[in-house]
Length: 111
Length: 135
Image (cartoon, rainbow over all chains, first blue to last red; front, top):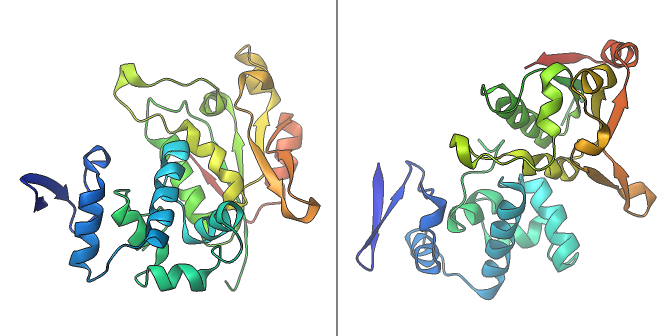
């Protein structure tokens, strides 16, 4: 299994770059993963990442993109709960990419 | 999505002795993500999947029961539980999780997802499906 080395810590990831152990997650690894993708995390990104972590904590799954969009809209407002906004933040696919930075597994139903 | 089919996932097994319950739930979420008309039925030991207060620390398995609460978000709003199976196990609907969905067409009113049905009613429901997958 591959690993990302950061600040003297070793974070194990799967072949697609998802964190192997959710408990290893911290903000530094999220930033590092984004950097490896050539992205920088803004407050808007963190809002979605933190939302996903809370969703996982409650339901034990990473939501599919349709569900994420609807749930974000309900919690953070309609201007954020739409695919245009979320795809601008996470061009590789909001559920897929944001889940990766959040340390969650790839969403169920994502191919 | 071009065609929407009526899928019923039939669950007959206890949640943790085998992988069936978790696999069923995953396929349900995938089918729902593809916007199919998905419902679930819980029969025999399958009714235990919906018990509230599940704790799995002692058996080293992930407690996936909180995931049933996310089904409403996926528009899976029909969870049929067979009455006879509950009674044979000394259970009532109060022993099950309080699963809700929000009806967008009714000002987001919270509605119960769990519907207790008799074996005969469940047979009728199965009759109306296009695809039945048994776990």
